[in-house]
Image 1 (cartoon, rainbow, N blue to C red):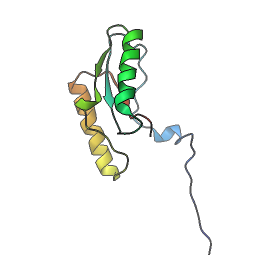
Image 2 (cartoon, rainbow, N blue to C red; image 1 turned 60 degrees about the horizontal axis):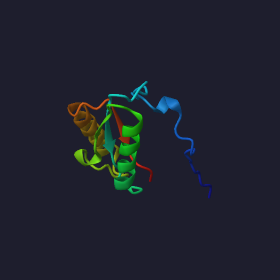
Image 3 (tube, helix red, strand yellow; image 1 turned 30 degrees about the vertical axis):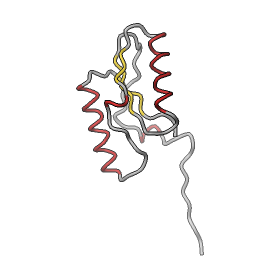
Image 4 (cartoon, rainbow, N blue to C red; image 1 turned 120 degrees about the vertical axis):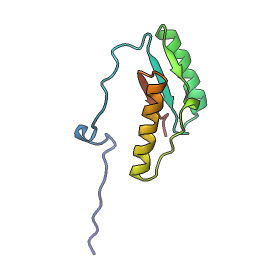
Amino acid sequence: MTREYAAISPAGLPLAAAVDVSRPLERLEGKTIGEVYNNHFNGELMFRTYRRLFAERYPGIRIVPFDEFPIVYVGGDAASQRRIARDIATLAKQRGCDAIITGNGG
């Protein structure tokens, strides 16, 4: 019996697989950044640390904390993931986010 296996490179999917990705912000000064947490790797501690470091480095930055967004768990079907991503994008726009940090390790 012949078995066929597939693998995904740890380097990620080809760039062509990434559609509708926004360009990085040129500057973070005065921007609003949202945090989206995936309930991995001590996010409560890490996001507090990120906030402190951003405030020290980027004057006028505003952070919308992860507890104002749904926690995003890994897994589920593709349709649910798309729905959650749309919901988060809508919330981010309502809160005036220029960008979001998605996830925290895991």
